[in-house]
Length: 199
Ligand code: ATP
Image (cartoon, rainbow, N blue to C red; front, side, top):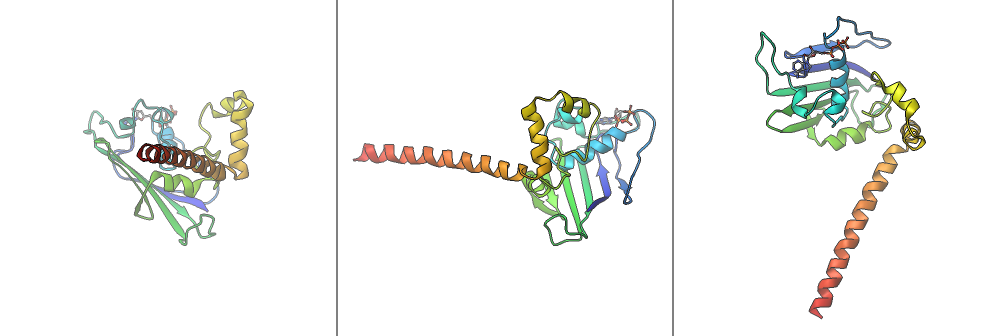
């Protein structure tokens, strides 16, 4: 599996529709300061499920939408699509090409799509979890991240190994099952209280 193409419009400095094709192997993105290199990597991270505006160098999610320039009016919608080559079946979907889209509107609406079909952000993160390309994986190392890993507490560093070893998905499911279990217990208690009152 590899990233074949990214299509963006309205994302940060990419006001117009911009399509970038990636060949297999190494791709270097070069350009003057402020030309949008980091914005490009943030666009990828955002589609992969980043939910923190701060991690995208913003204060609020609106900051990812093109805010206008001296010559252009702001836009209302940011949309980014990643097109992944899945000929090797690495992602568990019956498609040789998988597109993942995320769209955000200043009015707060937010949409996600896998192969153009609406889905939840959770579906995207679950699809990519343990694939090595999730938002928290180490396929994208931003400036300062290496230093941060060295300074991490051991328990935080353990999360890195868990992601690499492929157990993150199961830990996540366990936490969600435990949450449901405790909610169910609360409901049962409530039912018992009511039964007690009736009798
Ligand atoms: P450097 O080499 O200095 O790290 P870079 O090529 O990585 O630079 P970026 O940080 O990706 O550049 O891009 C910064 C530019 O993106 C700035 O000019 C900033 O004004 C612009 N920018 C960021 N967010 C928005 C937005 N929401 N709307 C319009 N422009 C934006």
